[in-house]
Length: 219
Image (cartoon, rainbow, N blue to C red; front, side, top):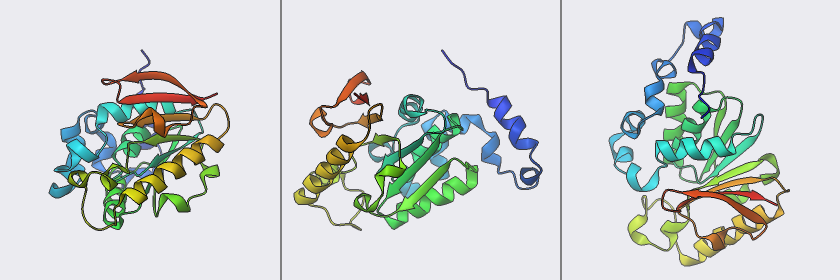
């Protein structure tokens, strides 16, 4: 088992004069990134209430992040919500840059605020629709079935965006075709997705958590 050297990271941060006067408390708190109850305290109460269904659990983020975290790579979370996956993975893997795209302005703003409190330079969030991105800018991908709310009304986060079966098909097809165009060795982690959402050019490397967390590499 490989252990991350937290002390080395902290020493580097503390020895940087630019950080010594404005060091956020959370940057120096590894327990924040080890338990959901601790991490979710970064968010408002109504966002914490959505965590069990909608935000990636810390343990899942750590496992998925470890698979995707190739040094100097750019990882995109498709439908990043309040940014929990990106921030947990980014903390544990400082040599990889994690991006999240989110269409809901409120969730994007909450993610930005939380990121500001923990000061992670290798994490960035983008407000916009996933169909508007240049996917050539990203190497590997995390996808926690962000489109499911289009076909299951009870799973909606809120009513700030339109949902429909047609949008589910549109977004699912868009991501499928985007992944299919990526080069070999592209890594993908899916959570609560069907295998039909992944192009056959991707080989399943590992699955866990009752087979809902799957790790893929394009052949």
